[in-house]
Length: 94
Image (cartoon, rainbow, N blue to C red):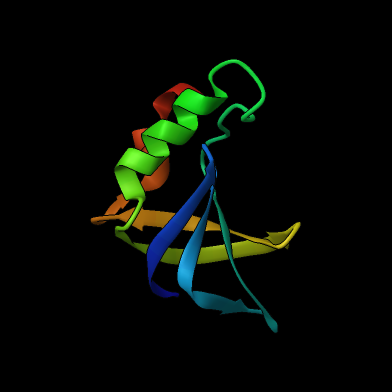
């Protein structure tokens, strides 16, 4: 797809980007990376996962590649940071 700046971290596996993404006639700012599933914020480890994602990508430029679907307003796609799949940074959640 293209490169986007990370503007907000929602939880360990959801974040927002700027500008908006466009895919299959839909647009939005929320992204859900493929390849890992972090704990929910209200569960054990959830805040740690959010903190880790924030340290990695907040304010950074990421590349959104192959998109699969839009789920609850989030674009589910492959996300790359400096050429490496974001999921590779989270082996504990694969």
